[in-house]
Image 1: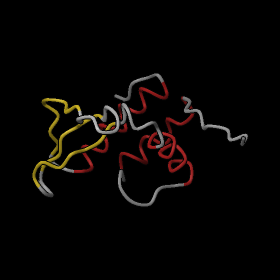
Image 2: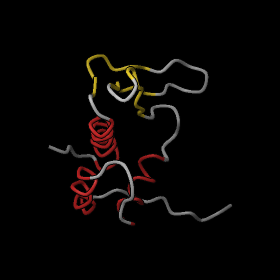
Image 3: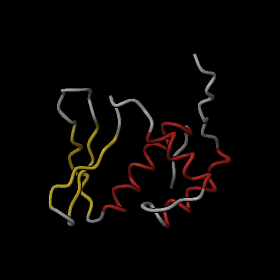
Length: 103
């Protein structure tokens, strides 16, 4: 059994929000990557995902419900760019892990 410490998101991580907003896809600083690893390493059930409905033109927000189960699609959450969708997921994960909203 390993003694791995799980990274805890705190209000001190707020400084990373602007970095993600500027560049949601691509190379990130070490600190932002650590935060994203925490966000993206959550269990499959309940995990937010983007589903492409029109290649390179439109995405919708979904949430995984478990292996072999259908994806819950959020009505009215259409995005015109991948970056816009990634930002929405980041905001939702921030609220889940930090306990506060991003304006």
